[in-house]
Length: 187
Image (cartoon, rainbow, N blue to C red):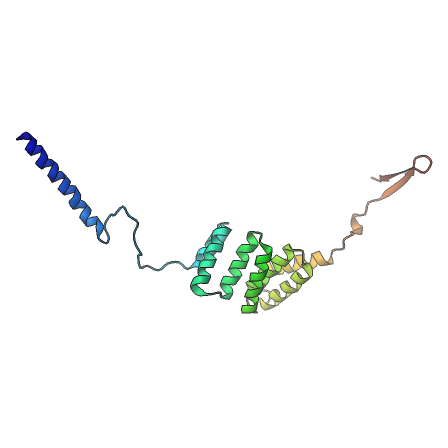
Protein backbone atom coordinates (compact mmCIF):
# COMPACT_ATOMS: atom_id res chain seq x y z
CA UNK A 1 0.00 0.00 0.00
CA UNK A 2 2.84 2.27 0.76
CA UNK A 3 4.20 1.70 -2.74
CA UNK A 4 0.86 2.68 -4.22
CA UNK A 5 0.76 5.85 -2.16
CA UNK A 6 4.23 6.79 -3.33
CA UNK A 7 3.32 6.13 -6.96
CA UNK A 8 0.15 8.21 -6.62
CA UNK A 9 2.06 11.01 -4.96
CA UNK A 10 4.71 10.90 -7.73
CA UNK A 11 2.00 11.01 -10.40
CA UNK A 12 0.38 13.98 -8.65
CA UNK A 13 3.70 15.87 -8.51
CA UNK A 14 4.37 15.10 -12.19
CA UNK A 15 0.88 16.25 -13.20
CA UNK A 16 1.37 19.47 -11.27
CA UNK A 17 4.70 20.10 -12.97
CA UNK A 18 3.27 19.46 -16.40
CA UNK A 19 0.25 21.57 -15.60
CA UNK A 20 2.58 24.49 -14.82
CA UNK A 21 4.15 24.18 -18.28
CA UNK A 22 0.84 24.48 -20.06
CA UNK A 23 0.47 28.15 -19.12
CA UNK A 24 3.97 28.99 -20.31
CA UNK A 25 3.30 27.96 -23.88
CA UNK A 26 0.75 30.68 -24.54
CA UNK A 27 1.53 34.37 -25.06
CA UNK A 28 2.89 36.23 -22.06
CA UNK A 29 4.06 33.08 -20.29
CA UNK A 30 7.51 32.51 -18.83
CA UNK A 31 8.68 30.27 -21.62
CA UNK A 32 12.36 29.35 -21.72
CA UNK A 33 12.27 29.95 -25.49
CA UNK A 34 13.04 33.21 -27.27
CA UNK A 35 10.00 35.41 -27.77
CA UNK A 36 8.52 35.91 -31.19
CA UNK A 37 7.96 39.24 -32.88
CA UNK A 38 6.71 41.71 -30.32
CA UNK A 39 4.91 43.89 -32.80
CA UNK A 40 6.59 46.97 -31.30
CA UNK A 41 8.44 49.61 -33.26
CA UNK A 42 12.02 48.66 -34.09
CA UNK A 43 14.72 51.33 -34.13
CA UNK A 44 15.71 52.09 -37.72
CA UNK A 45 19.11 51.04 -39.01
CA UNK A 46 20.29 54.61 -39.51
CA UNK A 47 19.76 55.49 -35.83
CA UNK A 48 21.39 52.25 -34.70
CA UNK A 49 24.33 52.93 -37.02
CA UNK A 50 24.79 56.46 -35.67
CA UNK A 51 24.84 55.11 -32.10
CA UNK A 52 27.38 52.45 -33.05
CA UNK A 53 29.58 55.04 -34.79
CA UNK A 54 29.53 57.16 -31.63
CA UNK A 55 30.60 54.06 -29.68
CA UNK A 56 33.48 53.39 -32.09
CA UNK A 57 31.92 50.20 -33.48
CA UNK A 58 32.41 51.07 -37.14
CA UNK A 59 31.99 47.59 -38.64
CA UNK A 60 28.71 47.05 -36.79
CA UNK A 61 27.60 50.55 -37.76
CA UNK A 62 28.27 49.74 -41.41
CA UNK A 63 26.05 46.65 -41.14
CA UNK A 64 23.30 48.76 -39.57
CA UNK A 65 23.61 51.28 -42.40
CA UNK A 66 23.32 48.49 -44.96
CA UNK A 67 20.17 47.36 -43.16
CA UNK A 68 18.85 50.92 -43.42
CA UNK A 69 19.65 50.92 -47.14
CA UNK A 70 17.67 47.70 -47.55
CA UNK A 71 14.71 49.13 -45.61
CA UNK A 72 14.70 52.77 -46.78
CA UNK A 73 16.62 52.64 -50.03
CA UNK A 74 19.87 54.36 -50.93
CA UNK A 75 18.94 57.82 -49.64
CA UNK A 76 21.53 60.56 -49.31
CA UNK A 77 21.52 60.09 -45.51
CA UNK A 78 22.19 56.37 -45.83
CA UNK A 79 24.87 56.79 -48.51
CA UNK A 80 26.62 59.48 -46.48
CA UNK A 81 26.55 57.27 -43.38
CA UNK A 82 27.93 54.26 -45.30
CA UNK A 83 30.71 56.46 -46.68
CA UNK A 84 31.54 57.76 -43.20
CA UNK A 85 31.74 54.26 -41.75
CA UNK A 86 34.04 53.17 -44.58
CA UNK A 87 36.20 56.23 -43.92
CA UNK A 88 36.53 55.27 -40.25
CA UNK A 89 37.46 51.74 -41.30
CA UNK A 90 40.20 53.10 -43.57
CA UNK A 91 38.49 51.98 -46.78
CA UNK A 92 39.18 55.25 -48.57
CA UNK A 93 38.38 54.11 -52.11
CA UNK A 94 35.00 52.72 -51.11
CA UNK A 95 34.27 55.74 -48.95
CA UNK A 96 35.05 58.11 -51.83
CA UNK A 97 32.82 56.22 -54.29
CA UNK A 98 29.87 56.10 -51.89
CA UNK A 99 30.22 59.74 -50.83
CA UNK A 100 30.36 60.84 -54.47
CA UNK A 101 27.11 58.93 -55.03
CA UNK A 102 25.63 60.75 -52.03
CA UNK A 103 26.61 64.15 -53.45
CA UNK A 104 25.08 63.16 -56.79
CA UNK A 105 21.86 62.15 -55.03
CA UNK A 106 21.65 65.55 -53.28
CA UNK A 107 24.19 68.19 -54.25
CA UNK A 108 23.23 70.36 -51.25
CA UNK A 109 23.81 67.74 -48.50
CA UNK A 110 26.63 69.30 -46.49
CA UNK A 111 27.75 66.25 -44.41
CA UNK A 112 28.41 64.23 -47.57
CA UNK A 113 30.52 67.05 -49.06
CA UNK A 114 32.48 67.51 -45.84
CA UNK A 115 33.16 63.78 -45.45
CA UNK A 116 34.22 63.56 -49.10
CA UNK A 117 36.70 66.34 -48.41
CA UNK A 118 38.07 64.41 -45.44
CA UNK A 119 38.52 61.30 -47.61
CA UNK A 120 40.38 63.34 -50.22
CA UNK A 121 42.65 64.86 -47.55
CA UNK A 122 43.43 61.36 -46.29
CA UNK A 123 44.29 60.30 -49.84
CA UNK A 124 46.61 63.30 -50.24
CA UNK A 125 44.41 65.00 -52.84
CA UNK A 126 44.57 68.32 -51.01
CA UNK A 127 43.68 70.65 -53.90
CA UNK A 128 40.40 68.85 -54.60
CA UNK A 129 39.72 68.54 -50.87
CA UNK A 130 40.10 72.30 -50.52
CA UNK A 131 37.58 72.86 -53.33
CA UNK A 132 35.15 70.41 -51.70
CA UNK A 133 35.53 72.04 -48.26
CA UNK A 134 34.92 75.47 -49.81
CA UNK A 135 31.72 74.15 -51.38
CA UNK A 136 30.59 72.55 -48.10
CA UNK A 137 31.40 75.74 -46.20
CA UNK A 138 29.37 77.82 -48.67
CA UNK A 139 26.41 75.43 -48.58
CA UNK A 140 26.53 75.49 -44.77
CA UNK A 141 26.72 79.32 -44.76
CA UNK A 142 29.76 79.11 -42.49
CA UNK A 143 27.75 77.65 -39.60
CA UNK A 144 29.91 74.59 -38.88
CA UNK A 145 33.15 75.01 -36.97
CA UNK A 146 34.28 71.55 -38.12
CA UNK A 147 33.96 72.45 -41.80
CA UNK A 148 35.71 75.77 -41.22
CA UNK A 149 38.59 73.96 -39.49
CA UNK A 150 38.81 71.37 -42.30
CA UNK A 151 38.95 74.16 -44.88
CA UNK A 152 41.60 75.99 -42.88
CA UNK A 153 43.76 72.86 -42.71
CA UNK A 154 43.43 72.22 -46.44
CA UNK A 155 44.39 75.82 -47.25
CA UNK A 156 47.35 75.69 -44.87
CA UNK A 157 48.55 72.42 -46.35
CA UNK A 158 48.39 73.83 -49.88
CA UNK A 159 49.99 77.15 -48.98
CA UNK A 160 52.83 75.66 -46.95
CA UNK A 161 55.96 75.45 -49.10
CA UNK A 162 57.92 72.23 -49.10
CA UNK A 163 61.04 74.12 -48.08
CA UNK A 164 60.48 76.34 -45.09
CA UNK A 165 63.15 79.06 -44.94
CA UNK A 166 62.19 79.96 -41.34
CA UNK A 167 63.55 76.59 -40.28
CA UNK A 168 66.82 77.19 -42.07
CA UNK A 169 69.82 76.31 -40.01
CA UNK A 170 73.08 78.17 -40.18
CA UNK A 171 75.77 75.88 -41.55
CA UNK A 172 79.51 76.34 -41.72
CA UNK A 173 81.85 74.58 -44.11
CA UNK A 174 85.21 73.69 -42.59
CA UNK A 175 88.17 72.51 -44.65
CA UNK A 176 89.91 69.41 -43.27
CA UNK A 177 92.92 68.84 -45.39
CA UNK A 178 93.37 68.50 -49.12
CA UNK A 179 89.93 68.34 -50.77
CA UNK A 180 88.05 67.25 -47.62
CA UNK A 181 85.36 69.39 -45.99
CA UNK A 182 83.19 69.03 -42.89
CA UNK A 183 79.73 70.54 -42.66
CA UNK A 184 78.92 71.93 -39.18
CA UNK A 185 75.89 73.68 -37.77
CA UNK A 186 76.40 76.86 -35.79
CA UNK A 187 74.68 76.94 -32.44
